[in-house]
Length: 140
Image (cartoon, rainbow, N blue to C red; front, side, top):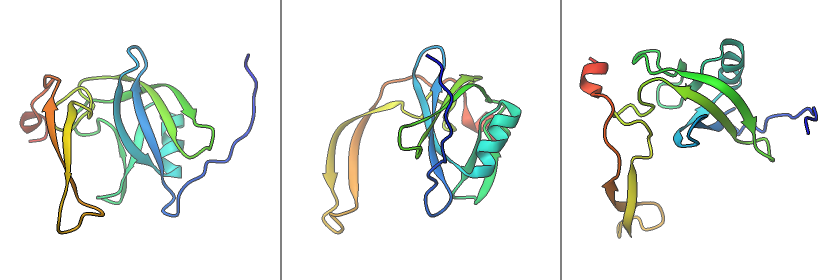
């Protein structure tokens, strides 16, 4: 059932949307980042994942420094048009700290910071994946 429709993306006040990168073969969630209108356009135009760095305030191509690019297999949008799903072929690791996925830890327990209980939560985690590259060598 292929039916075409038009949707207007619901960018937030900062003109950003969250984008989830998912391995197209395994279904594993690799990372979450944000996209600007320009990042979405570049992704569709080039076939490679582009994101917007909130900390650096700039557009970036995934793998531009590391070579760990994400080739786009498909871009999906959710029902509210406020989140994108990039189904990708990942080269190397998606996580800048050396793992295949940014979700390499499980949360075992959490506690609130007594100084600011409404916002600060600390978690005890367990690493459940093996690194796939050394970030010190990759990002020299």
